[in-house]
Amino acid sequence: MARPSQSGARRLHVVVLSRRALLCLLLLGLVVWLITSNPFWRWMYPIQYQPTIQAAARESDVDPLLIASVIRVESKFRRRDVSHAGAVGLMQLMPDTARWVAQKMTASQVAGPTGGYGSWPADVDIRSVARGDMAPLSYPDVNILLGCWYIHYLMDRFAGNQVAAIAAYNAGPKRVQTWLHRGVWNGQLTSIGDIPVGETRHFVDRVFYNYALYQRIYGDDPAWKAH
Image (cartoon, rainbow, N blue to C red):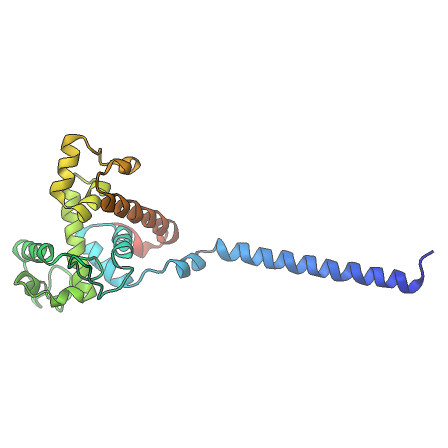
């Protein structure tokens, strides 16, 4: 027969183990809840300049989450980022492209009474970029608005094909058009391995990886719905 002191020690040991097991289960449950909760993933994958992206995307009729994905890949939301090739700002616009877009915008849209374009605020100085002043390209509102307009233009040029449009954003529309015309690439995400330029292939892959991620995290938010 076990002595009373030994029996009590065993019971105490069982209680301690049970408490530890319960604590482990509670911690495990907390971790599972945390990593499956939307706030956690929004904290892990934040989107900066949200109101600006949403407003510019609405103005240009493009998906704001696609724009956010391009920005994440191009600049990681660093507004003063300048590449070795000279691409500027959040959406890494080349000065020649930015000027061309700004000229198209000023030619095709009638400025409102305060000088803005459509519903866009007047302090977005598209005209100065059209004249060749590239200083505003570091401003988030200017850069994002120009980038959204350009992606909308590419979407139209490639008959609504998002993947081809994003490839053209990196490689240029003429080059992508040549690939499609010659059958080098069919313009689909499933066949991006056929894109002959490694930088463009990697760019498209990363943009649509982030796009799918953002859709899972932010897609139920009405503010991020494509119009």
